[in-house]
Image (cartoon, rainbow, N blue to C red; front, side):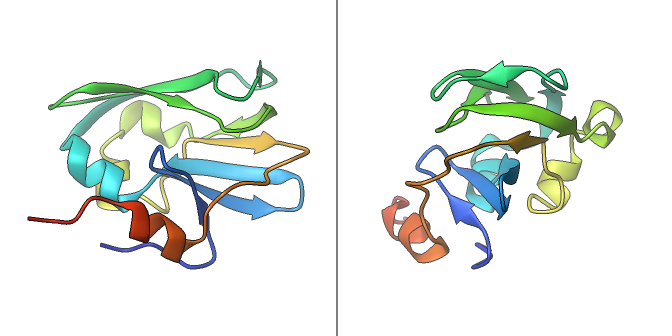
Length: 124
């Protein structure tokens, strides 16, 4: 599995591309692999504000549905509208198929690629 070192991660299997106070968010390679074929992504509204721990999106797949929550407070500045017609893009390129872009003041507490990979369950 691939975990780009320039990204940050959290234990909920989200990746974060941090650029100053702007953060793109998506599902990790591990998450998309566990979900199977993704068939729907609920995108948040631009300008919506979410508190830490609040659900900003729901992803539906052939195996399950999951809610995605931010670990920090943020406001949506853009969404990846390509996912409306092609949610499977996440399966094909999880690090290219970001879900939403946020403006956030504080993104402390995210993990490095090494820290994220170390906390994943061992493959059997």
